[in-house]
Image (tube, rainbow, N blue to C red; front, side, top):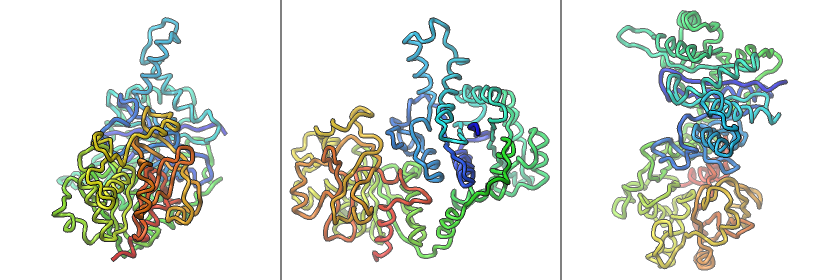
Length: 534
């Protein structure tokens, strides 16, 4: 069948969960046997979120092909269990950059370059790029921002054009908010009506409305919304608040979202059945766990949990599969010092030292690593967290009190972490940054090899500085082995401490690869060992 295009827009307010609705619909269609991919269009002018402060936009997600992307791609991958690429996330910055580059080359033959048709054509080209591969039955494209924002106008116009061009192969879902006014004791649909009216003024009639609300949507409210918004009653879908985002696909299935979408696209929903057995198995484990596992995440961006979104979700996956309820505390590394570290970190069954470039909060992370090492607390260090573990070991075990990373102290005589020369062999993306999936060979009989169950793995990276191999021999003589390394350059990827219950640092980002149906082995084992720590 021809590829079907589904667009998800949002109205009334931001942060309603367009990404979760998009991922949930994708999961349901995939569970019916269809090939699905999700895409995010971001209206901001940044070419990608790689230079954005995590407090500004949450975590920067990295695809297997080395693209720095919006965090919604993490939701897509965790739900669909399918890797995404650069084509799955497009920003206005990239759209305009492509068009301007073409104009500079003379591709438009001297014509005036305008938003319509040149910008909208580039947007449509990026949307159709996924469908034209022949790999997908459905392309679900989420449009960032809120209808009515000036930044989103070219995207909505592109949707209008694609609906006109593709006819029945195209569909629009609009997500809005239905507030409950306590004084009146009722739900108010007027914001939804105005949001749909705004969308209609921009030339797009939604086919399906998904209503976010804290109170149940009554049949009367559905009929009223359907009447005023030109949508069938069955296509008015309730999206109530739930305890976990992983309940949303099941709620959407109960509401019939996938059936409505298929019918609107001319596909008989009775031809297929969504097999959600594995998903429900995970939900049962998630909901039925009664015993807690208490983990401390030590980082510099903890005031915005979305800065560590993939790590948090990976810990949730791992805890559920270990039959534990996750009790996670986010601890600001800047507040940790030698005098209070025991008060802050005592009582945790596991400590995760989070990634995060730059000097702020690094001392607290080093102190947290020492606490975990000396007190036999299971500890996982990710990216900069792994580098911190190496620095702490060099200072307190090898005796190099001035050991540091060249990123923060380029003058130190003991650059445990440095910009390595042999790095240049593998760096072909992001200037000096290693981005995307790279091979890692695991040392036989190491903990890393045992938990992965194989010798060669591929993990995603986002960093500039590396473990300095000049110190490898001295580290290993003192009990810290490099148990994973890049087979092309010999760059260290994993360090682990002997004679410790579980003390492992990884240069890569395992959180990007953990999904609901395939939780990452590093997180699974970290949580498993943590449950045994008293």
